[in-house]
Each structure stands twice: as structure tokens, then as C-alpha cells.
Image 1 (cartoon, rainbow, N blue to C red):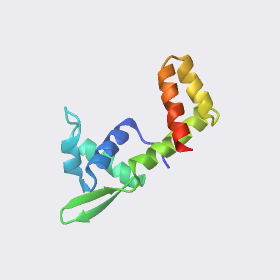
Image 2: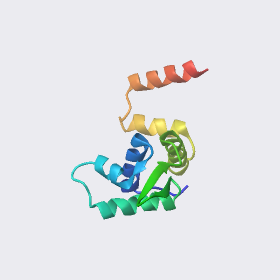
Image 3: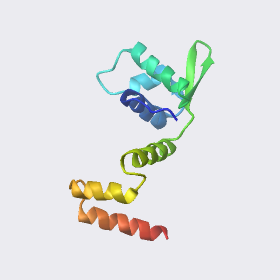
Image 4: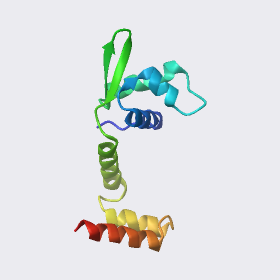
Length: 119
């Protein structure tokens, strides 16, 4: 799976939220100020090329729909992130954020409760 740029991720968030739609309908949902339509259309076409969404011609417009769910993207992205930056160790990742004071003891306790509930 090819990595997405920040603009592509932002566009995919709109696609995931809206589901099937047109480039124009996605563009209208993007953050203000709107980027030029042609720039946004190029981003959507790149997402089609990268197989994140599928475009099909309907009359004079392109209808798009996501090919990967937001959950699946997050799972693959995070797996790669953990592999590349934390030697494939979730423990190392959590330890890093604890040392950097980005996660509190209460957060860690909640994570432990969630893990124990899954058993």
C-alpha cells in the first residue's frame, strides 16, 4: 500500500465520511478556504491511481467510492509506523510516549483495562 501525503489523507477523510460521491461533492466538504478545484481533483485522481478509491464515469461526472475503510488504513499505517520507528514493538512505542509525557498514568491504566476486557 503506497503511503498517502497529508493532502491525500485529508481528502480520504472526506471520502470515508461521505462514502460514495463526486469530486465536486467531496471538494465542497473540504476545509475552508477551499483549495482550487483542479488541485483537489488531481488529489482524488492520485487516490484512484493508488487504489484507495475507485472512480467510474457516470454521464459527464466521475463517481467515486472508497476501496479501503478508514479502520483498515489506520491498521496498516500504524503497523508500518510501529515497525519502522519502534522495532515492531508496541511496548517500545508506549514507553516512548510515557517518557515524552504524552501519555499519563491514568491513560495507561485505561489502556490496561481495555486490554484486560478483550481477554
